[in-house]
Length: 94
Image (cartoon, rainbow, N blue to C red):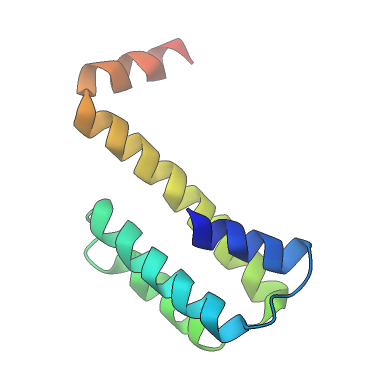
């Protein structure tokens, strides 16, 4: 997701000029991920307070790690929804 990559760049390649705009993009990405994996607001709830009072260190790294893991989960959910058998076989091969 573009917002997660933008957060990565903000943290490790230099701060974004408009951090408030980045936070808005992240909130939208979080809401989209939450809806996609059907987390019923748990992802939004977990990141909301951190994004509200955002600090690059240490909050940014924690948010990035969490969202990166959730994005990987979303990819697995998409594979499972498309073809559960393929998702299971992929797991067995690994």
